[in-house]
Image 1 (cartoon, rainbow, N blue to C red):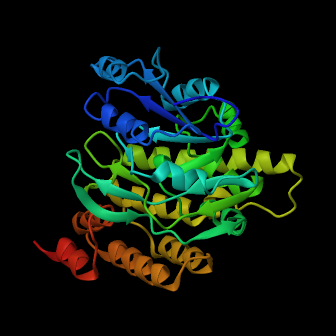
Image 2 (image 1 turned 120 degrees about the vertical axis):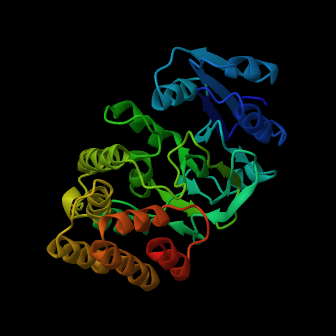
Length: 338
């Protein structure tokens, strides 16, 4: 792949001990053979055979001392010149023809492009349809969702393309190691968000990532999610202050995400949740900009989980995080079966 003034998109693959998957990620990009896309692979100090696998692919690759995902992505960013960046996880893949469809939707007015991903297991077998379910649009209406809730529906890392100036915000981050945090939620304030409904990649679910696998989330991971959310909102508030943005951003402890994760944390730690807390959570949910079906289903989940004995409540939370198709019947069987 060539790098010149016509290059529009850079795909940066960072790898840490993913010798089993990284070649598939690289080939999913290389086989599309586009001159308007550059590829950089960064080995983040892997201790397995990842570097040997990468070098055999004959790509523009670098090996650095282990510093974590954000550090590796920033290193890769410095090796590229394209105005738009896709950080492809080394255990994920792009679908054939995806780069052309991405590039066709990029121009200087776009701050972020997003697309669904098909979930696959460690062997590459499909385990669920496109996730998340996205609507097709190009505008900045997500600003309202960010201001009111602190979040919006967005794919995992590999389903996002960011304009380079958004990626520059990563140099300010010292509170987490991910690259799809504040960049996601700042994007609507920087320009249009383009949302595609067609899945353009594969998202691999396996034992070494934090994806839901029908098991109870680790309390330590939930605590980290809550802490990251608080830091992201603080950072975003600083960013909006530079724009002298007039509308207020929700306080973290009044946001549905914060309250819901705190509820899940209590259940996973075996603590009882007061009905007052449940009432506040459901009230915030119903005041939020969510579809009626979502509000109804989540309210049912919260109320039932709060009333169940902790052992069954923990099953409820585990089912909520299952990657397969979920139904009310399946939920009841998972929770109520002895």
